Length: 178
Image (cartoon, rainbow, N blue to C red; front, side, top):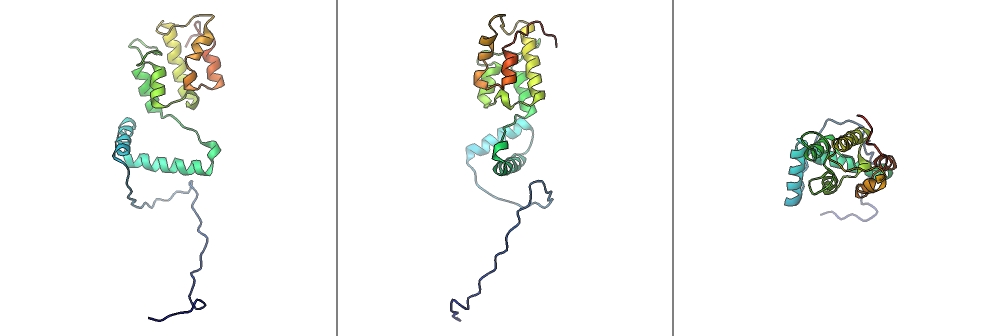
């Protein structure tokens, strides 16, 4: 074995690594193996079934979103997938239309159980919810009394509505048409 002095020991030159932008498309994929708990694996499976997509796609999407969030933490916003909102609205709707709000099978409890917030809805999603609430009011499935608009809006406080949403919820809409 040849012994070199510290002065003679070659040091590798480090070049700065250029990380690719997230927007850059790279069609080269690599296989990555990692371990997760059985519970997490099952949760991913349930979410994958709900979204009708493979677990791997969910993981790739989550990693991509996490990296975006790290780059722009102030822009982090949880979004609610349309398919999940549609399923939730269907499960909380009466056969003749309208939304069931209260009770353990109601819209408010279902949103809380999923961890969804009204403020996270897209404008189109909020429109769907508004239409269902309005339909429920019109068909008398949802109890709404003139003079008690604030009380009605307060039912939604746990779902953290935006100011615009709260204003709509606290307005007498009994005469509105779709």
